[in-house]
Length: 343
Image (cartoon, rainbow, N blue to C red; front, side, top):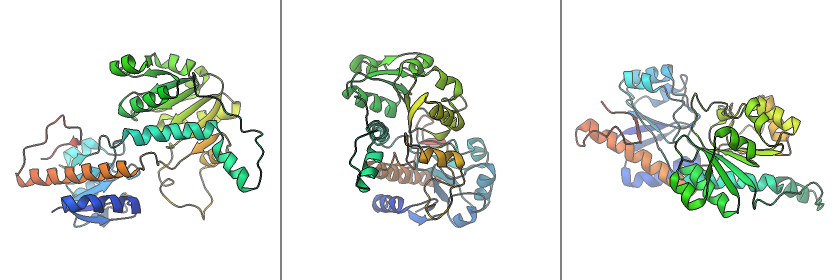
């Protein structure tokens, strides 16, 4: 049995992990604070820490964890840009992740953002609560025959593309490795990225964050887009240059934006700030903008996704534990759950 400290844990994490742990039987310690240099000490006595996208797992944190005997970092998410993998490997700390959990959860949330923005559902609902049943200012558009651009057609992007084809949309896409099946069976057209930007009524981002994708949406790319384009981001916040997006919204070049992620979300998302003044002026402006819908990194938040996340994470913990005991073969290098292997 391994003692595992789950940082940045919420009631939905606890419920899902406790249900999954009936099978795995690990010693779970649920901690509300995010992992940082200041909070590392809370993992004292634990061999593993379980972290999320908002936890900081940089070199100072990894060194502090190593000093208190932590040998495994288990990411309960797919992204790992918050982890210094080279330092982890040098310290002999294994790192595992959940490479996929529910592409439907993310893709369906992207569609929900599109529908809510297009049909002005949030504004309409607020009006009705005030007794205002006017329809003025609530005109949307048919999705049928509109062009939807999908940037990244991995499992999430492909799922999103199939859903939008179901609405009768023309779907164009960009990916470094085009999906031949998606093109042949669902009529998705692969184009150069600049052409995707130029022809799309709606653009949805489904790529991981890397040096090459950071600020993929910027002033130059927005200038190439159709006037009034809708931008949807359920990937990573830094895929979008926020000041450029704000300028695009102010000028009308961007007609609407749906954001489940935000470049400066660390310390803001996943926390109740209702009794405070929001210090981020850009985020405050976006929240007040009638043609912007922001959700707090909740696209993953379905029962099915949470169950898969907890089961894969605890399964990886058990696998690493077995390898440490010499009871199991070394995890194959191509197994996508493992980012840094077990020594």
